[in-house]
Length: 475
Image (cartoon, rainbow, N blue to C red):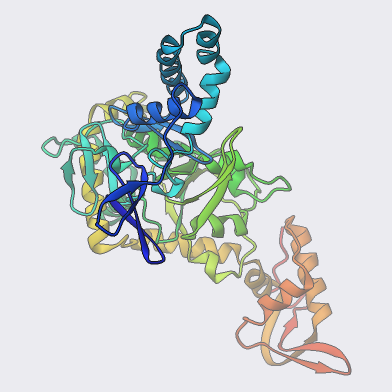
């Protein structure tokens, strides 16, 4: 029995979930009134007693059903059919035909379902689903991604996602390893990093707080690689529309975000040229916070985020620049190989799938390595990520192209700000507010700020003359 303390009296639930009290002699006595035979309440109690191991109810998610490989939403309304069977059995106990018809009616079935869904024996909070971030559900059982060990599933594991295949730790994956070596030629460090990255992506851990951008133009293997990983991870993967991560006047619909519950890999692609990242949204989705969303025709619910964002693109979205907290989140993985002509293998994805069990075992080993060593970002990736941040620090680029840094230089704030706005306009870029620009200017080394006759003056910076050496007008 489970105990609950309310003042000096101890209340306990018995194995059937009934609430009772322990009397002075230590005996349990029920506090719940007897059920009225034939009532919807009694039928709801029968339903829960008979099907408590098959169903759970979670606000916002609705009815969940236990299956061979874990739990899933009861979209086929099996719970309704089971409730109908309970109502039919109760109808057989009624003496009069009218009472039989009323007991077996849709109204009665709906009523008993409404009562059953509040029964504490089958209700479950959203945070209880897929709660262990280091377990990976596979057809063969649950893998502990900290150790690589495999065990059988239990009904109380409450896992709702499933990989496409089971891992085979004894099999080899030569095609996969050769493919990686061709995608990242002469770069064993990046190949090793990809193993840790894919392994980390299979976990529900998010403390790295990174967003991974796979960049490269043309046929370079990035789409094949991540199409295969997406297939391998099964229902742990979500194809998230790229617009959710891009700056737009439109807000992401709550139902799009609700799909992230339980997701480990959120894959986005089809990025258009000239787009801007939605910086506040990226900070939100890469933080270690709870997210509130809702499914279609359901209530809002709160759940812990477990997804890692993988973005695949031929174009580099722009950043506003100058945000160190955002800069540290971006990891740009460059794909520089070319698979054209005879090098292109149209059956590569199928051949990789043939090695799926072995590659999943390889990825699990990567997760174990990540737990032990961390991501270990290699030099090629660190350099590409740093260059991307420099490219997108528009304030620094403007200073390099249009300004001069010298202790004797002094310029009015509005003069500098209008120079910056004009420079941005020639590049077709978004203009920040004066306040935001001033905040970013305060971080520029060698530049100070003072007031003179009511005007704000920046000391240590001046605007280059058009014919001055170093002047670089944007094209």
